Length: 231
Image (cartoon, rainbow, N blue to C red; front, side, top):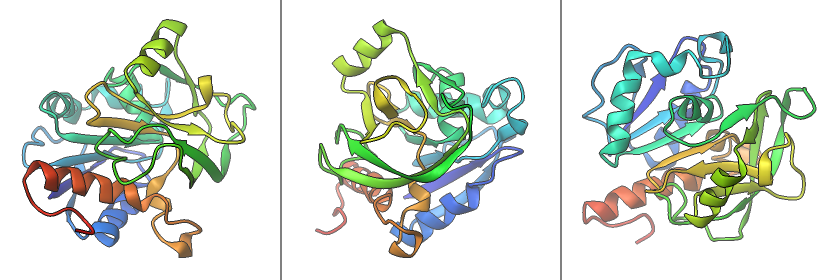
């Protein structure tokens, strides 16, 4: 399986994502610059956290116009596996690959700490290694993580099982319905504000994020008729 880590000016979690793939599942992984015009050789594309283009205008607002984004949209339509983490989630929203928008944290403060999440669905390619209702420990680090959508969109997210994670116990940013992550209707595109790449080893405080990566490898192996992890 081959992973691409997209890199925009201002990305700062690209190395974390690279090492998470390398250390968690030992698959091929490459950095791909925002000017790239071909993603056809990759099975999974990760949009990392950071401050793409300095977060000018809005988080992700400029990144959506990068040359690589046309290829990302094409990859999503082809059913390739895509995950946007923190700023990557914001970019997916701005590009229209996921519904809704991101607002400033309700406290108007940057929040950086561990957060409990509840797994709401295991049907996505990134969550099949979890259990519905499971509480996991994944850190957050954001100033604009307050997910917003209108009531009709929220009802659709619930109806089509598109809410992937909710904050459990305490909502750190004011996001509607405690949403911490969502997916598209097909389940191959996921956006989440918490950072699973920072939770892949007990030395980091939690290894609950590791299963994001084992899940996607399982999904790819099942699709291609090879053994899943642990089998």
